[in-house]
Structures are given as C-alpha cells and as structure tokens.
Length: 277
Image (cartoon, rainbow, N blue to C red):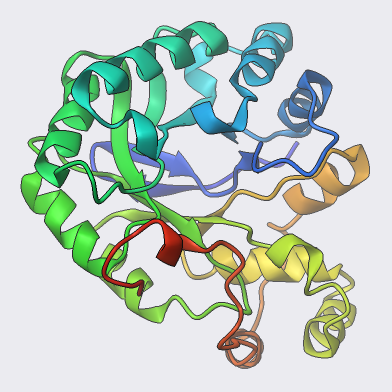
C-alpha cells in the first residue's frame, strides 16, 4: 500500500492527500469513508455543517486503525462562532466523531457580524484545552488571514479554500506560504467541470493517467493538500493513486494557464464583507 507523504505544518505535519466528505452531492456513507481508509487515506476532512461527522466516526471505529494514524479535520460553522456556541459545536462534533480530540479544528467561514478577535480566542481555546492538536481557518481572504494570525493566541497551521486549475489562487497561496501554513484545497476537481478539458486530457494521456489524477497531482506538486470526494470505490482508489508520476515544469505551467475569471465554484462574496482574494 502506498504511504501518503506529508507536508510540514507548525508543530507537526499533515498528510498530503485527504478524503473530503462535503459538501455532498449524494452517495456519502460510512462505507465510503471506510473504503478510503482501507485504500490508504489517512486524512479525513469533515465539518459540523456537512452532517457527515457521525459517518466519519463510524468508519474510523470500524477501521480498527490506531487513532494516531488518522488525521481528522472538522469545522465550526459561521453561525456558531460566538464562544458559547463555538464550545457547543466542538462538543457535538467530538461526540459525533466518537473522538476525544481532532487533529485540526477550523473556522469554516468568517462571520462579519462577530468580531474576529472573539472568534480567534474561541478557536485558540480548543488547542489549549487539548481537543484540537492544530487549528486553522477556511475561506479567509488574504486580509482576514493576516488579521486572524495577528489576533490568535495560538499558531494557526492551515488555511483551507477552493483551489483547482480553473481558479487562480496565486495571491492566497503566496500569503499562506509567507505565514508558513499548509494550504488545503477543497473542490480540487472543480466538481467534475474539468473532465472534458483538452489540455488536461492530453497531459493525462501522456502519463497513462486520468484527468482527475493529473489535477490532483498538479496541486500536490505545489505543496497543496487536495481533499477530493467520491462515493465510488474505483474513483476513491484512482484519486489516491497519484504518487507514482511527476508532472514536468512545462505541464505545470500549461495547467496553471487554464485559470478562468469565472472559475470559482463556491461564492464567499455573499458571506464575507470586503470582497475576496
């Protein structure tokens, strides 16, 4: 079985490939998560808002794997960022996951109605209390990321955001690297929108791989952690099988050139004041 490489984060490491469990388009089950674990995934991403934590917990329990072998991420949703709500959300997550701690606790979306210093204080407390080994933020732009790091009493380890070949995240990736964090990419396959792309198809054929594998490998070679989702065992396996080939510099540039002004799938502008980077 392939051993997933890891990327360094402040105070530890994060597996370079994860299995995402949301947002769901159907087909999510504990069996799907268990299949991922059996194939070799050791990084499982969920969130309170997804409604999948109990399935992840069931699969982890059924896997028989030592707790320390699995990197588990969950998130507190934007409506629960006030301290009392934050603490309740964390407690509910741990109960659903059947865990005493998670490896990464994240703020799922920023909330302009709640002061960021209050949010960061609640997030930092999860690390101090030992219910999260690492902490991070999702869907923060560069300005909010700078502010979050300044306001948080504990070091952030990860930023999670949408990233795939159709979306230019140059600015955000540069900010993440400047701060020494890991970048975790959701929607790394653009929800299937790339599967008829001619450029990706040509590169995939040259390597004897599929388009999804090439898109995921493109992220990995930027030291970005993709978290693809599939409910189909064969696709879960294909998405994992990306560590036996390397894209050339020219291929990396050709894929990067696929970025589009309308490439974004998620719509954070509706949730975050001040625009989005």
